[in-house]
Every structure is written in C-alpha cells, then in structure tokens.
Length: 227
Image (cartoon, rainbow, N blue to C red; front, top):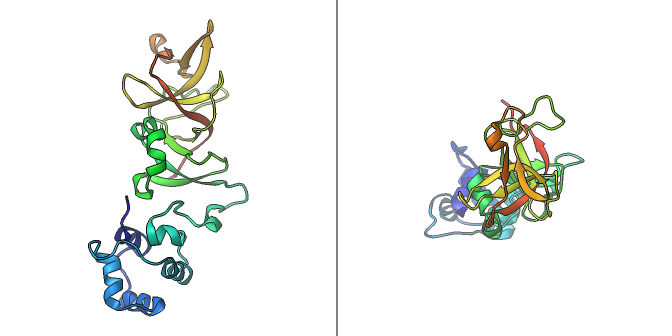
C-alpha cells in the first residue's frame, strides 16, 4: 500500500525546487511544518484533505486524481487523463505471473505501487483488468496469423468466460503461477496450446488439470514501452 509520502514523492520527485514547501503551504493555507510532514513523516500524517489535493493537482498540473494523491484511492489517474487518445479505454496494472495467478484474491486490495507500471489500453478490460508481459517464446509464431514474442504486453479481461481457440491466462495448480496459451479442444478434452511451430512436441499441448483456474481472456496485445 502506498503512503502519502511516497505519493507526494512521485508527484514532486527530488531534487525539488527550493521554496516548494513554502509555495505548497501558501497554496493550501497550511503551515510549512505540515507540508514537511506530508513529504517526510508517515508517523504524523497519512492523508491530506481532498480539497488540498485538488489544489495541488490543479496548480501543478499533476496527472493523478486528487483522491489518489490524498488517500491512495484508485484509480490513480484522473478521468480526463485516462483518455489520452480517442480510442483509449483506461489504464491497467502490469503485473507478474505470480500476481496474475492470484488476481481474483488480489484485485480488490491492489494498490498503485503494487504494479510494475500502469499502461493504457484501447480495450475495456473490466473492473479488474490487467496487463501481463509474455515470458519466453512458446507463443511466438512469426509466420502465423498471431504471434506473441517475449516481452510483448497482453491486455487481459478476467471477467470473460473463455471459449475454444481464444488466447487465455490460466493458473496451473502445480505451480500456482499463470501461464499464457491458446485454449483448444482435442477430442472434446480441454488443452492449452503453445502456438510456436518449433515448440517441443511433448510440451506443445498441455491438458487442463483439476485445480487449474481461468485468470482471463487476452483481448489485445501491444509492444509496451519501446526504447
């Protein structure tokens, strides 16, 4: 969970301009010592008023929401800044395979700082949508219709019910981690397929086992942050 001090540091990263604390105190009508506590003393202060957060966001043109700055309430970004482009639907957390495997339990308690970063999507991924980075090349097929190379970012909607031939995220009971594969039926039995044509035959199709759990349907993919 983020602290007020970490949120202030994110919005006003060091080195800070000389006199910034004084300017903030004047803007918000508080004492300079109070602003010092906002930055440095989590034992004395853990939140600020929404009104003061609104003043800070407006005056310094911060791209976070006042509610997040004041109290850590999600979403982190103000609605006006979520839609950076005409087709953008929102920002979603980029999480690890371990987090994805436990996402049903984590979603409601997830804090902004728990994600590697928050990325935009042109798809509506739902209330608990998330992003997951491809790990490895089992889903890479350069000559095929779909190809997901190592490092590509998957846009996942956990509210959708998977149907055969969709790309899915599944938590394997054996490892408690999420894996990315294509859901297929072979002789009526559910399997997870690695689409890489050069993938070892004995690993290309993994049968779904009791205890495996759906973690979402992949509805889009992107390259993420390019250098």
